[in-house]
Length: 250
Image (cartoon, rainbow, N blue to C red; front, side):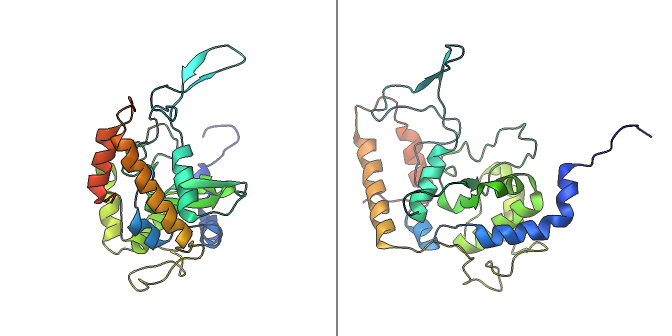
């Protein structure tokens, strides 16, 4: 038998506490209204995780210079584009509250984060408002690393929005979710085949302000597509995203 201080897998150490963790998420999660998703599924079709970042003219690449070393490196999209999309789709009042973090429902499936997620690297899903939930920052780690919680969020999103991710990398999980399967411990306040009209706690209202924001975003996307001065604007990607979601800009 190996000597030393035995420490179990971190997920196993918490597994018996999953019901308590789920209750915290059930009570505090903030969800986009289903009508908001129907009106505009993807709010930033021009970007995704790891994409190059440009200035407003789409001509100058953003860079960052480290003070300690003087080394300059090009900047890439992290999660800011998704966060801005989610906060706008929720119509969060100003000032924006502290200690909240965007969680991609269909994102990482590798608890070690050793692999890149092809889902959030896809502009069809990175800023999809049915693929995000806003959580108190301390809870973010649970949703990223505990498979039991991750699948509950996916089931809730499917019954709330009628959507499960179409990316090939998650095809098996999406098929299970679409089948109507409900995992053990699934919150009773979340929608399910038996409760299709239930809205989970924390669903934002659909408002006139959101309706105006959607119209403004569509106008911005249309204007950007037509702007011939935007040297690095990803027109083909944006058009592909709009087509895949049947988004009309007029």
